[in-house]
Amino acid sequence: MSTETPESMPSAADQYATTKTFAELGVATPLVEALKEKGILTAFPIQAMTIADALAGRDICGKAKTGSGKTLGFGLPMLQRVAESDGFSNEGSGPARPRGLVLLPTRELAVQVHEVLEPLGKALGLHVNAVYGGADIEKQVKSLKKGCDIIIATPGRLIDLGDRGELNVENLDVLVLDEADRMADMGFMPQVEWVLRRIAEHPHQTLLFSATLDGAVDRLVKRYLTDPVFHEVASDSQTVSLMVHHFLNVHQMDRVKVAATICKSMNKTVIFCRTKRGADRLVEQLQKEGVNAAAIHGDLKQSQREKALADFAADKLPVLVATDVAARGIHIDGVDCVMHFDPPEDHKAYLHRSGRTARAGSTGVVVSLLLYNQIIEAEVIMRRIALKRPIVEIFSNNPHLKDLANWDPTLEESK
Image 1: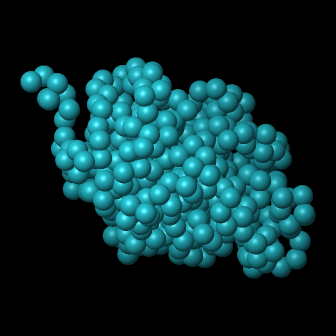
Image 2: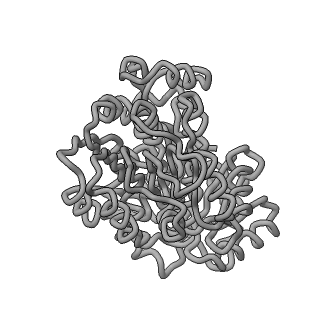
């Protein structure tokens, strides 16, 4: 499902293209051949920047947004270093003792990273496992006992397995912290430090990737990384410039119809709601308007969430309604529109939500539906991200809603 890879890169994505091949970066031949079979020939910037340093054993601190190609940026050197290190896949009795660990904030992200790295691991004879909450822990334990070189994990399930004596992380050679800022936002820093304290005495490499490097993430870097090399791509301002932003003042009784009209004009839309109940209610309302939609949030079974994401990625489902926490696992290219049905908490949440579109150098539409008492919040967010857009009152019968990508309300204002 994950499409954080160059094979899906649009031809207009010059900003994300490089001429560096993976062989030139020092990636092992079996991995280069496995990538070639998938049509992946050249590296994204974050990959070109980080792979050589990671293969040299340096700690990495990478600043990159979702969709910039981080998965291969940390995955290829981790796989290669683990394959070249002394050790075994820990098949049989006793706790699993992986040599590589990817720690990330959500189960959807764990599933998608596993889908990218598991076949590449096979090319090197490695067992790559995924463990996360919301799934059968006994099945995950059985999988670990069949062999365990690398684990892709969410913090809670990793600690659960450790407490049960099924997993020991003290002999890690490579630790990856992916979306460290999101783990901090979700309150996972104590669990992250649980891992870091356990491997402190064992020589290891840490690869940290985050959209921001302030606050708790900065403290983590200073305390636990050793002489890290810093790499950065795709700043927030660059990301914002690739999006068409609309701030629409709608009326309470017409808001769902406005949303439905927009959805019908797009191939893929992600809609954000603040609450689980609100997401479920909006799905029902959209379906009454003839829009095929499904929700993803924490109260749904993992199988339901995975099916919704799979259908959305495969173009079988045009609209996904998500809460903020669940949406942190949506890493799918080709999203035409992100809709803020409920306002984000702040400008960082606006950027993160909006980052579901305009991925891999392509453009996308971001639309905020604002009730009269939400306009001030939107104005604050625009100031914080240096974005100047008019807030336009609109109704569901307005023809502009069917072509938001090409509508510029500022031109109408100037007439």
